Every structure is written in C-alpha cells, then in structure tokens.
Length: 176
Image 1 (cartoon, rainbow, N blue to C red):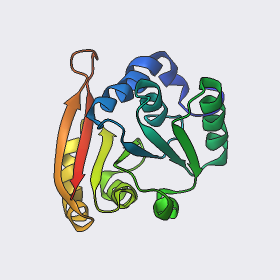
Image 2: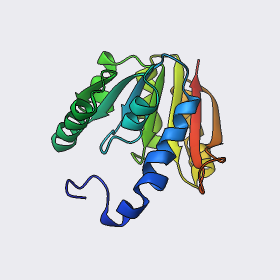
Image 3: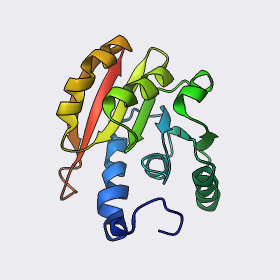
Image 4: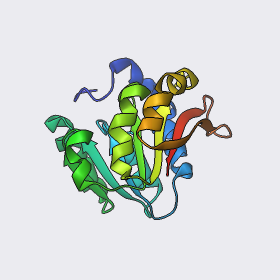
C-alpha cells in the first residue's frame, strides 16, 4: 500500500487476515474499558476496536511519525471520538497511560512484548496479544518474564471460529 503500512501481498487479504482478524478480539474486552494498543501502525487492532466498540476508550501508541500522521487522518475522517494517539514507544509513555487492557499485534516476540504491555496496566488488567500458530511456544519461552512482571494467569485462546476461515489466536495475560 502507498504508505507502507501493509505489504503488497497482504492487500487481497486485508479484510480476512487483518481487519476481521482483529475485530473478533474486541469480544474479549470488558465494557467501557480503557485499551492501550502498542505499535498501532496501520491501526490494527486499535482502530478496529474503536469502530466495533464505541464504548471503549482507546490510546494508540506508535513511535513512527508517518504512521501517527496516518492514524490522525483516519481518526478524523471516521469521526472517532474514543481514540487518542500518542507518539512514542510504550516504555516512554507508561507514566501517561493507565489501561485496563493492553493490546498488540505483530509487534514483537512475547518475551519482549510482555515488558512493553504489562507496565501499561499498572498492576491490574489484561494483555491481549494477537499471535500466530506459535503462540504456545512463545508463552512457554516468556513465562518467567511474564511472572516477574506481574502476570498471574497466561493462556492461549482462539476467537472468531464461527466467522473466520482462520480463527484468531490470542495470548491473554491476566495481571493481579
């Protein structure tokens, strides 16, 4: 795509593999929750949550200026009043964000991602990391890091089985 948000081979699969793949995860989020989406880039999953769930308050965290500009344009074009965009890395904005849920998709391996997302919960909440087939292996490798950061229960869940040809795999980490 022209802004480099998705690879050219992904365009035909935009709805099924990207947008709908993220939208089904919104069902795992409590009503009226504050969600911090780390590495929002192309707006996935953050913008899909904002569109699917007007009750949510979303903070999209993205370090790259060109992606933040795009996110601002989309939020304005769609008239989304439940979205705030913060330019920076998750570890730089942790003192300015206190979320109920932290989400991420295609950001980093779970051993690193746990350290980017769990602190945004400030001791209480849930991480929802959209992952692929190797989710269970990532959980195993990251288990010590997750526990050290306050993760109490980590599980791999699947959502969207009833509407997607390839359901979405999510690592859910509950923090005390």
